[in-house]
Length: 218
Image (tube, rainbow, N blue to C red; front, side, top):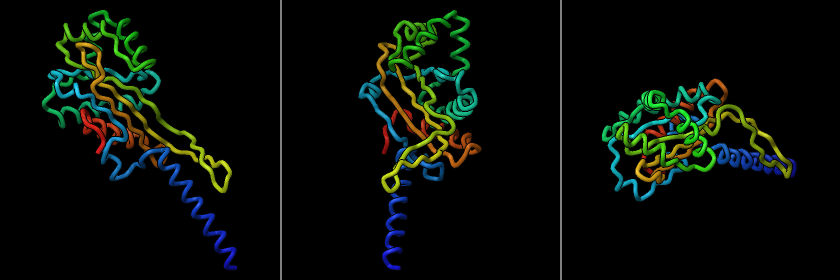
């Protein structure tokens, strides 16, 4: 009996190890402490010496693919940025897009987004137009890396175990318009409890990015 209990205990500990492993893969769970820090961020020393009076927010590079989360995240993100960083003037995505359309820069903008998605680089010609015509010092652009269900694979007693999780993931980059240099980068992934909790997780990830704009994790 004692041997059987020991085997059951070892199995439970192994299972807990799998779940802990999955927790690290799926990042943080949606909860009170979720927004305590951003999961990954890089700050270029040039951020501190770059003039940043006006920053243009661009729509997510894959907004058409993720319309619902893009709308949720963008609305909360713009609001939080303005409240938490009053030292900057943030030009919201709809205003930036209106300028792009009225200035016949749609093709240049699409090429810019394509290069950003493919190589995380910012085209200088498009940035020049924003700087010269809108007096923009930097642009903030990102894309949604995850929204909805995904499967994680762990191991239990030497065998693969598949676990279903629901996640919201985003990464963003800040490029200065003078030379296209990336002076800040942030990335985060938050796991929701279920499909219905995804909008709540999107709200939280918006808060995380707004609070940690221009900063690195604790």
